[in-house]
Image 1 (cartoon, rainbow, N blue to C red):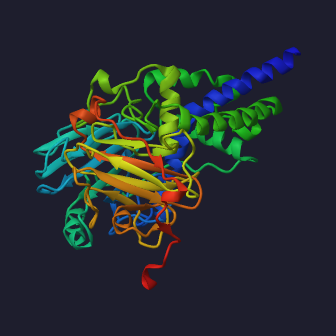
Image 2: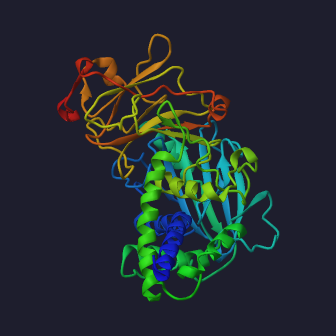
Length: 464
């Protein structure tokens, strides 16, 4: 190997590492921009510093990775370059809700809601990173943002269509108010012109956005190591020397493949389920109201933390810590074979998940992780699903298939699947101690022998 080839190989390896480190920032800010321009599923396009509200539960038209079908969303993209914002939250009674605060690097750094702050009315002053502890409004709790731009993801539990008007009233009472007069609009995320390739565009966004939205200090030191591949300077990536651009192309391809593989292998399997109790524990720096500064919920090792953070962004952007909501996905059946709509499966839950709020299993297609269209409009099944039939011992047997079951009980407990590959995801809101300490275990998803199949091809609901 010549010296020049060795150098190029070395910087390509560095570029693949940089891809993993920078992916959460780039992926997150792409979605922030998309939200302000296009909206998110049922949440309409909304400018910075204003809440956009979904007025209905998400469906297949909501093309956002691993979106839930349990709650309606209230989402705000914030730009605190205009100064502090006053957040006012209404009293919610016994309804479960959470406002999750996420910075530009996807750190969950604060929570307001049923678990974190209770159900009473509240006031919160949201301040930028350099805020100098000025007087806050009376009765307001200060929440400091790690980056100038951040996201609030609000989720309100909905008990069916008849419950939506009450939720809409709560959404309308959720307000953000600018505390300083400013005639300049929010700057938002800097625009980055497309480079000659997808890879170079990614790295140019990483270069620009990592300087605009600096991470925590130890992460800044990690970024400085990418100076040899042009990711810390002022020169656009498209103008770097040819050998560096070639290395970035190679590193991008290797890093992307490694990240996609990590979704399936990074988390230990327990009876086929990825027990993701710590998948969002990469924040080790920022702990505002509701975020637990506890070693149990922190993973400081950079060798695994950056990969975990990138995989979490790709597979479940804006997901909560497990102490707020636990997420268990699976890709395989009891025999370790990939789940596919070409087969029929059963999942028996006994006991059903122990939670303080509620639980559900949601169906997603692959490779996009979108909700799956089906003739009965059921995208998830859980303890609040009308008409489900429990077993004699209090357990629940769920049928998972693309074809519709003919047996009445199986049909009542049917979770529709796509015809191809899929990934179910169990969510447990306000999970109980048995979930968090690992003593609660799910049964694997079992394949139903062809001779036992009691399914028929899907039927349009209007003609059923």
